[in-house]
Image (cartoon, rainbow, N blue to C red; front, side, top):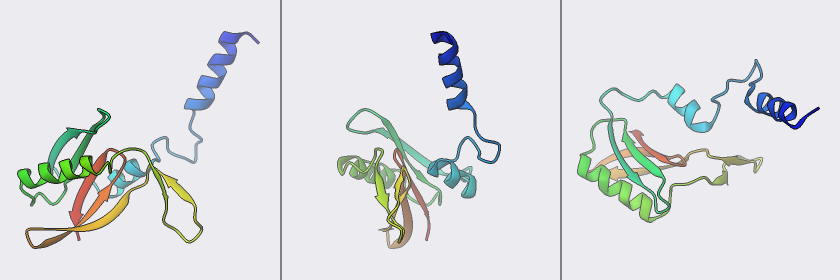
Length: 125
């Protein structure tokens, strides 16, 4: 088999998704599928310290844009964006790219904050 044929074979193998598994099965795609973004969601975009695009999405549409921008800058300064792995279950399996969840209080209201590799999402608590 020639190099070109081998390369095409590898490309097909890497891009073919098994029939029982969707191609976009990463944690962020699953989250967006299960928790759709509101049409009026507020979005503020920025850049990480390494120059990658990142954003914060207020899916409650209640947080002021200035507060979102400040929170995004805090997350960037704290280096919360980027690909990382962590263990959340009792089996100690490491999840790459999965969300890190916490709760935040803004203007006396409690929200759920989920941080994915390059997107932070604010949801109702």
